[in-house]
Image 1: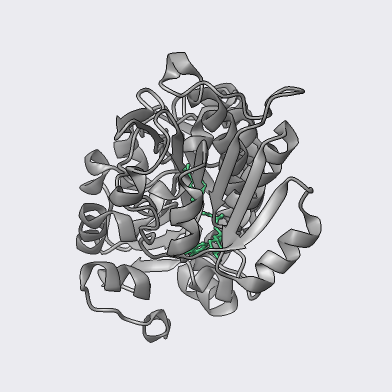
Image 2: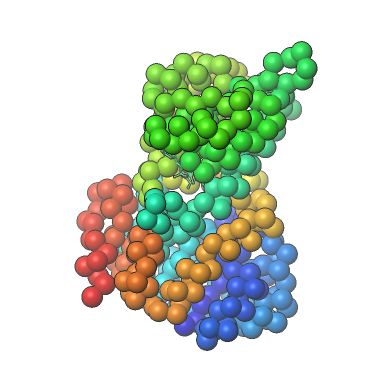
Length: 371
Ligand SMILES: NC(=O)C1=CN([C@@H]2O[C@H](COP(=O)(O)OP(=O)(O)OC[C@H]3O[C@@H](n4cnc5c(N)ncnc54)[C@H](O)[C@@H]3O)[C@@H](O)[C@H]2O)C=CC1
Ligand SMILES: CC(=O)C(=O)O
């Protein structure tokens, strides 16, 4: 198979979807790898390193889309790429379709085979290709929250951990999965008073066992959020219903009750965001203020720490990419249920239910397409 690695074009996205070490593995398995010039620069991988690993360096994304059987990415294809995608071509990347109708319609029209990193799922329910970036984003969420609490950044000027004799800040984390747990751990480590909310009681039991004493677990419901949000200095949005649009858990009315200069970090923005007032921002212009509350809603947070994120992401993606390249998408999905759950749009048909539901489209179970 010919595998294409384009340079990311999303704003301030420095990650790359395959390292030279990954290229070497692909080439040794008999595949050809095309890498767009400078694709690895933001992650410290030179074109020479890719060439030494056996890749062919090409100069434009157009060449990649024209020749590759499978195009990998980190972030979703953007409008300039839509018309380059070919019928039957495999697109393997984060897609987050339920929050992006134009992209969904473009991928349906392309008749490509679109496999989303974020819905590949193990039998235990975990999301192996989302987890590493959620670990990064969860940790970053607290760094960003702490930074934007500073007065010159629009915050109301409280130090997360306080100091001896002065109270620490209050952090509310909604969603106790990978992002939420990583965020809560960082906030606890800094000495904040942390409330960690989830709807899954078993998860709360586990978290209550393993988290530090300054982390309080609470059942997530509107009443608890309404009560806590009044005293929160930082609120982290970290919920997920796999593949679906995020539920809006903090409403405009609740926002009005928050402290002036408090900070919302909506990590779930890639699935549409879990605060009613969220809209996606970029690393270049990461925040906006509504009702005196600073909103941070960057949809590619890990792209800012690409030297960590590229390695963490590609450690997880390479085995799946290799199986798809070795077997082709159909056989890979027949043999590996985890990959099958990654099928979002196959040759014009929506094969992920939550995506079909989000836009009132016809859902086709992927099994119907695997014979
Ligand atoms: N903005 C960015 O750069 C990044 C965003 N993300 C996003 O962060 C979000 C969270 O991801 P993960 O932590 O990996 O997911 P996860 O599946 O590990 O955790 C989600 C948690 O949310 C809980 N949940 C669902 N509905 C809830 C509700 N109403 N109230 C409270 N909890 C609720 C679930 O029980 C689960 O424990 C996803 O949308 C993911 O795509 C992840 C990485 C980077
Ligand atoms: C998960 C995701 O959207 C990201 O890492 O950018």
